[in-house]
Image (cartoon, rainbow over all chains, first blue to last red; front, side, top):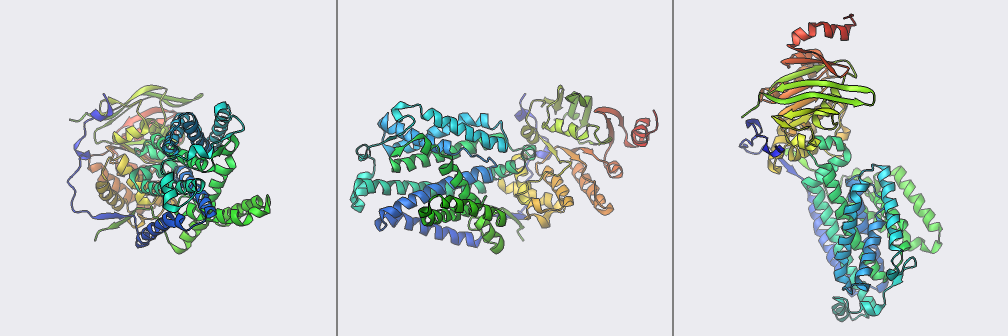
Length: 364
Length: 242
């Protein structure tokens, strides 16, 4: 006899509810204004390649892909409580799956990107049950170890360049879906047109991931996720399937992370295990962005990625001193603004452009 | 159709290494009954709740709800089957508002649609006196409000069996009286209650039957007045030799 067959006594049946006494709202007037501004900014960014230099487009590919990774890590660690330092595993897997798709299977790069995401998701689905046996710091270390193991495995594939990596010749990418259209549209050479194409894909993914995470956090599943993070035992005791929600989030984040990896390495056209599975590039910077911007907010990663971009641009000439400044800044912000730059602004001015809290009020 | 016994524990045993926390406990809760549980610290009272809600698995014995064996069900499935609980040490979802704490319980444990959940949560906040603080973060609440939140969140899951773990401790006389009234209201609606409590006068104002636990064993049970005068209770609380 299953649980479903337990008869439901009268007290648990839905009573016909009277006129609603309470109502719930999430958005604010400011958030609706922010939505309009957001649309304008996205449209402007989409039109930018018409006037922007190739350098700026390449910078913005960096900004958009890092923003996407930061939003994904924030969803995983900030909202989900799954503090992973192994997200480079899925960047690397996505990148390698893309190269394998192009070189071994002769796929079109644009088609290979979602397949690379699926591949990363598949590996995440297999790794999940193993890693979820660990909690807190042990999970963090476990995820890192898993990423290192995957890096070593990828380095074994001689056909993908082994330990030293490989490049894809521009000729192989010249027949890419959409490339000719972009070339004709903007009058660009193939290499510059490929940047623009990747830029548009990265913009689309950044927008989709940001809106997707925002919608998820406002949904009932987002509420269940936040409850699971705050107190797993209590969440289970109020009927939440905590393990299932975490596992689903982990796989979805890996899917999008894999697509980011594929896009980044499509633009670079060169791959190596050390770069694609770099803990510094794909996890440390990402955590930096989220922490200085503001964890558990949609705005935080946006602020954080712009700060990182500024620092990278102006400090790059100082060599290793730049990493010292980056580290010191992170420590200072964590000490004096534990909720990050945006978190501090939101606390002082009571502004939220992407509110997630559900407010209860009486209707009359 | 209803079973006479909605919840049955059959020879439940649990040990942590050499320490026996539940020793072949047989316990039944009749449909709509209010049962009190007392016993000294470390008697296995909270463990009993963890066994009933599934956070702990017994070494042996069965747990039966409405004639269905639930011994192997997960805590979340047991909640959806109608078992709600409060924690002795409040376990709020700190980064969620008070209302959101209830909403997650009503949506998942209570199986309500969003529209119904909002109304149900509103009523439970009203009942437990938390409505004015509905939009505050649970982590910012003082202890007494956290205890109220434990009760409110358990009620939001629309339990048919409600397990209350020391929710009267630390209340003033007036607050305690209010709490007793609230629990009576819930009981009057047909909800079965098992209440662990050290504030015995509050407990006796509600329960119909009393169970005394010591060293993981049921040492006495029956009509509350008689149990309180029994030799076992005197021995445990007053140190009178048996």
